[in-house]
Image (cartoon, rainbow, N blue to C red):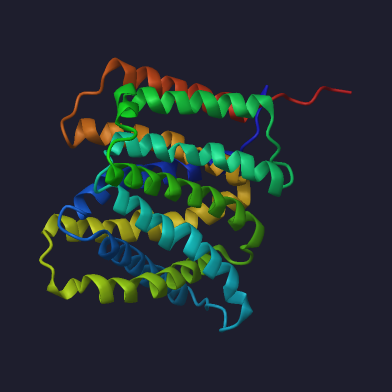
Length: 300
């Protein structure tokens, strides 16, 4: 038996897990005193500025205006502006544990889309079994009681659907990124986030009038961190991983990220995970092993 992915692929995956796994906690801190749209605008605005400065510092340039920008527009809407807002808005009502379970639908949706749209990403029984095992691990990790929170009044149901919609946006984005984003990874990341900022920032300025707000320092700091690491740097790593290993492998981030959320709860928030959490993490790792394990080719 031999692993199909390279050590670089696994390093990129783990870096994304660390960054995106922390974003749930920072989102909750940010929306404590800021409207969701302002949080998203600040996040993509900071990320766009960071990446554009890096691009120019390295002597590279964004593409000239024209049709070359259309792939970035598509990815910016589907993968940044829309899901960032849906998830941030939904997390005003949806608990982090239930949000983690809803977000775990993203890998399952990704493997189905990739099966039909991307060569070499066929849905095998082994891969499906691995992803299903990982999803069960998510449920146990976050606590089976979180599933009891599904449903409720109209506002709660719509909030849950918003988080789920964000997960499905990410699934579609991961497949489309592999299909339509070409060229320099850093330039692609910067262009995509610039488009997202151009879309979201004016809307936030118009609707939220953020200059009239008085956010807590913790919320403002959370927005800056979300823009720098889980958005700017993570977008570069995301494009690199999609190009190198494909969308199905990248989607494993959504199975491992809740583990980071639990660890942060333990170390930062003083929470005590249940025994189910540890068993769930073991199931997640087992599911990843099953989905990514490949038989070595037989000798002739």
